[in-house]
Image 1 (cartoon, rainbow, N blue to C red):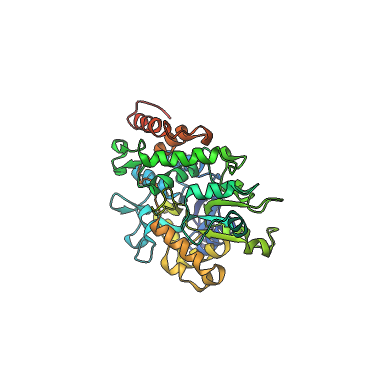
Image 2 (image 1 turned 90 degrees about the vertical axis):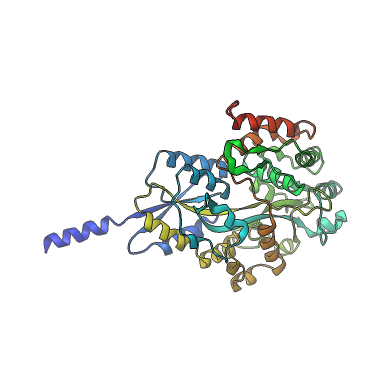
Length: 413
């Protein structure tokens, strides 16, 4: 009896713990999800990754390259799934991880080499946020599609108004560049599945148009003072700053909840009612825009000692119920059609905003799906930053030559 008691205690103490690495968005909600998805067989413990997607990738890549057996679950920017899967760092997941209910814009991000290597948790996209009063003062009709040129010129026409983007030297800057290039009918690279042998297509009219827009904003009175180091968070402050008419800002879905009056902020109901939204700006007049597609996918580390438990936990974490909770509490929108159809979302968001989010994901422009995406992104950041030095006559050609040389091993990042 004494031996049985000892063994029972050891079994309790030996209950497996799955470590789940999180990006900073929705931390409290994700911690609650981890607790709910823990079972009698295992517990889920969360750990925080750095703020930027680039730094998140570096930390996870270092752990997985070292075959770390405590990286059981991880939040992944969709563009890093191909790289990690190609390197053998992710376990393949069941086919039913992606179903007809999954939004196609995010479903495509978890597929690699005929397998599924991550589970969609939320699907993100960018829209154009603005103050209705600013658009009215500038005379810009937001009921119709608008171009980047129109947005920049409208902001410049109102003293103190600005255009908010993400133009620091990091991944979100490439998101902006890619969206504008795709909105002009181009691509950064063609046949990205070929890896280092992919065709670099940056020296094009589409890329020159993107460079022209960056140059125009950087030299405009509508440029924010911190343009070269701007990110998702810094841009928020310009919408309702003191003595300012506000801004036009491209940013992710979380913005709506960020400005919604609550105990966590000082925004008023009057300010909130002045918040407007529209589809991502067009690069070329008459051509539909290509809104950025992002989000978070859950990957299972290839070196976890508990693969079955980790796969089970990933399925629980990404349930429709949890997706809806993240949308309602944190503005991180569902990766499923049924999530968008949930009554809780209809109560939390205006119907036209929900439809804008959903269509932007499915009609948006994804970044290149390549096992060498980190290299592609790094080369673009190196040649397109800072924004004030972007030149439509030279930047596209220089960036194509540099990226091609890096992929061929003739140059280093």
